[in-house]
Picture 1: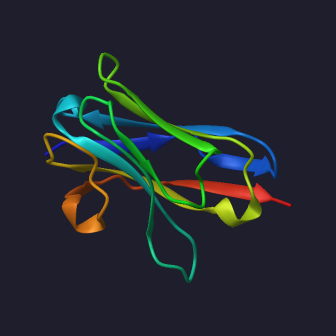
Picture 2: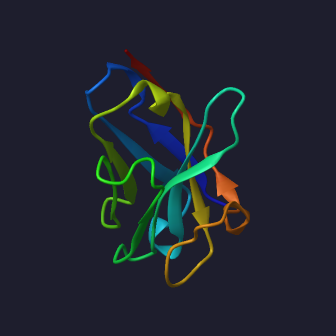
Length: 125
């Protein structure tokens, strides 16, 4: 089973941008649909964005549409989450996860069977 490693989190002011990266160790990323989830203290885990195995399809939570962009570079074995116009309510731990889905985007959490440890994103007002 691949291990997923996220990077790119940090502290940013409202209106700023961050780019998260997720890379696996021990296997090709192109075998999996991939998603970015977030969880803030006291809140349920939320699927922020998902992307299909090849990258042709994407899905976004309504709360981030128009601000976040998920992409993947299978040649570099990396999935990205570009986050623009960040808001304090985007503060959370962000996790990438993979789903063994050959086509389409996995939009429900139970489809994902492997999760990274997460990276903290903090947006100050």
